[in-house]
Every structure is written in C-alpha cells, then in structure tokens.
Length: 319
Image 1 (spheres, rainbow, N blue to C red):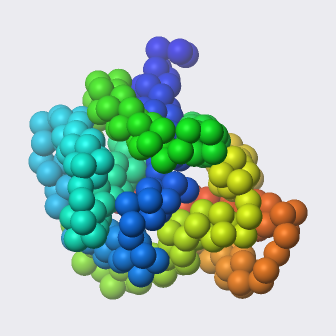
Image 2: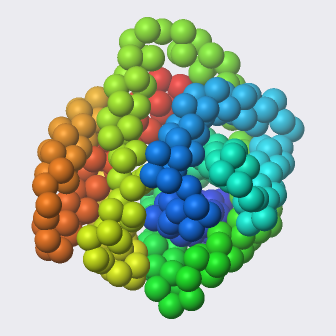
C-alpha cells in the first residue's frame, strides 16, 4: 500500500516545500515593495501586471512542460529563474527597476502552482493519489509561511522576510527531484487539452472562474497593508492569513466525501456566491472577530471553486 502511494507522498512533500514560500510572499511581498519606496499605485501595478501576463506565460510554460522529456526539468528551471529574480530584487534600485524585477518575479512564481497542479491531476487520473489530499499539504505549509513570515516581520523586519523568500525558492528548486515522473498517459492529455480549449462553452467556464478568483486580487495585494494601517501586528496579520488557509485545508480534506455527487459547475457557482458575500462584507470597517469569520469564508470563495475547477478539468481532459 505504501509503495503504491509513494508518488502521492512525494508530491505532497513538494507542495509543502513550494507553498511555504507562497505563504511568506502572499501577505508580505506588498510590504517589501512598500519598503523599497513604491507608492500604492505602483504596488498595484506590480501586483496586477502578473495577473495579466500569466494569460500569456502559462500557455508557453505549459507547452514547454508538455514537450519536455521530463516535466521536472521545466519546473526546476522556472523555480531557478524565480530565485534569480528574487536575488535581483534585493539589489534593485529606483522605482522602475524595482517594479520591473518585482513583476517578473511574480510572473515566474505564479507558474509554479499550476505546473504542480498539472502533475497532481495526472497522478489523480492514474489512481496514484487524490488531488485534494496532496494539495492540502501545500495549504498546511502556506499557513506555516504566514505565521513564520509574520513573526519574522514583527521581530526582525523586512530583511528577515526577504531571507525566507530566498531560502524557500532555493529549497523548492532542489526539491523538484522529489516529484515523481509523470505516467506515460500524461503525454496524451496535451492533445486532448488543445481540442477542448477550442470549445466556447469550455472557455466560458474558465472565464467565469477567472472573474471569481480575480475578486481575491485586492485582498492579496493590499490586505496586509490595510490591516497594518488599521493597527494589527504582523503576527496577527499572519494569523489572519493562516485562518483562511486552515478553513481551506479542512474543505480539501473532506471534499472527496462531502461533494462526491455535486457537479463541478455547482461547486464553482457556490464558491462564486460565497465570494460575492465575502467581498461585500469586507468593504465594511470590521473588528477582529468578524474579520476572522470572513477569513474562514476563504474555504468557500477559493477552495470550493478551485476543487470544482479541478474536477471540471479532469472530466473534460480525461483520456
């Protein structure tokens, strides 16, 4: 039994390592940009540019991954480039240089999660592990990154957080050797994807999900800065982020049983409805406890919709 599921354990370990640095960067990279002297408008530009660019970069990276003899080489290369730009970010001077390097750094870092998800979904299709159970270890590590990053910012300042980012990318690059080789059936999925991507109904579902997930952009970009301005400590802010991901983990853990008979589109629609309510309430000036409740709603606005999308893709791209 252990031998059969060893690839799932290795993939879970990679998720844990890769998502640790995400857990540090998501709350505190906007603060690093602020420390570098960027204004709110400039920070918004740096954080928004990768969201647009990923529409063009992800197909290119995915295509390279599909054509590569070993997808792990592409993953290691992307993470290595990300580490390189993270190093450049530390020495960049001037608004233009900081903005350019910061944007490229984020574009590259955003490629890692989808590449890992592609590996995990291939394994899921081939009975080598359940996607949600592998992915939840990334969420667990994301929480650790939130709390460790918050503690480091509170007690040692921005340079300690920057050091954690460099450490995380370096370990993630080295850990690509732990990712199990994809099964032979993986190569067939690429051809199926090209066929499905030409269907308007498929693209409409992806667009709807993209709009739903775009609602999280303001929180990811300015949540930490806003909470700091409202007097919350960096450790408390790290806990805010961690609460949301704990709720996400719980949903990932039970989704296989709880939502087995629910269609992917209904899961995505449910996540969108919860997201609308969450962002509406976030517009209010709320104290600590209601903010914690809104962070728990992350399980719906993100995780529920994400699981729905993964199941939708698995059904449409299955070979």
